[in-house]
Image (cartoon, one colour):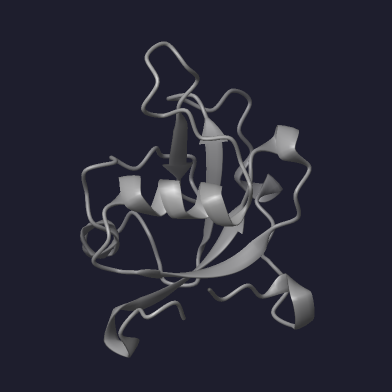
Length: 120
């Protein structure tokens, strides 16, 4: 799991931006990482364009299963403690500060076997 200590590992079912047409995947991240770092790591793993450091560019955000945007400065662990996230839960990596026409039922859980389970 990419050198992440066992006690810090957190499994997420990641839904990538709709425009990417990429299927949902499981990814392991550290519960101690900030949401901003998780966005950067997931974008890199999923080969999703990430211009978050470029002024005026569309920014990538991480949303929970209810469509709530998670603050880039919060740790994943604090999001769990605040009830915003669950380990193994579905999240959405998407452009924009808010989701338009969001339907929580549209989040798809990644399949738990074979190539659909990505651990890096």
